[in-house]
Image (cartoon, rainbow, N blue to C red; front, side, top):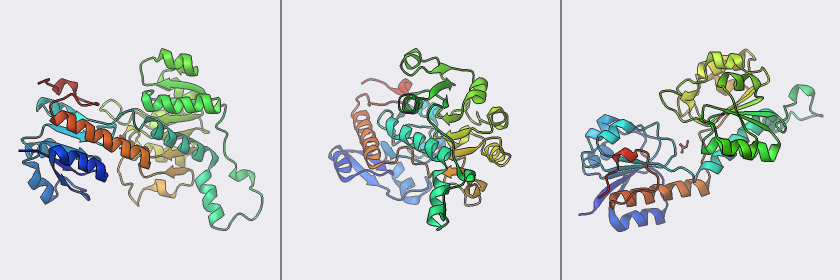
Length: 326
Ligand code: DGY
């Protein structure tokens, strides 16, 4: 009997055909809740799950006694109870590397757009309010030659910093990562305690993963240490930042502007004060959302689950401790 995979993320036809060769595949194209009745009913016979964005709970795992592998179409895995999966011997696979450059592009898009007030000024043009030369009150800030402070210096953080150092002549500081001598040599990056980085950087970009240690890593105290001219960018996870403290910092002029791809609650509530702030650029969590990259991520997830359900080591395994070679 073929093993069963439930797919609740977008796969293209050739990726679905690849899975169908070896497995029974059930697709849930519009799944927005793990409580969906049909999804629940299929879980009892499921060996694999492929998807993204849903929070997977121990209670859901109880309903899937044959589950062997989850392949998330994301690099981040804060939606998964990793220890619980490991305890149950369920493999969790993710999609690192293939999205690094695209997500770094998004980081730089937000840095540039927030510093140069691109969205606010583009809206002014569309409203027909560009009637004469732009006055100083609409001027932005330079990005080139400034100091870029990276909070998190993993693959994506390093890729943002590379753009800054090599493309824009920026000085790079980094914190919340072990020292990276290679990147220090390549980019002239300097390691700093976070407190020092917050006070020194002109532009701050957050790329740390969300864990119990990084939840609300950037809070009231941290905003208080930044310069009033700081451009603050978050492409990591919303919960790394205390959003209420960010809103207050923006209101009080403790920082100049924010470029945000992620929020404490997603989708962002229509009630959020962030939506009414001219100095905020809010994107709908599109860090990796290009045709090329989402296709590559989905392919990585398909390859991961195919290998894992065949008993072979997947390409990207989060919980190595759960791996038991045949
Ligand atoms: C990731 O892959 O983790 C991106 O943030 C998309 O969710």
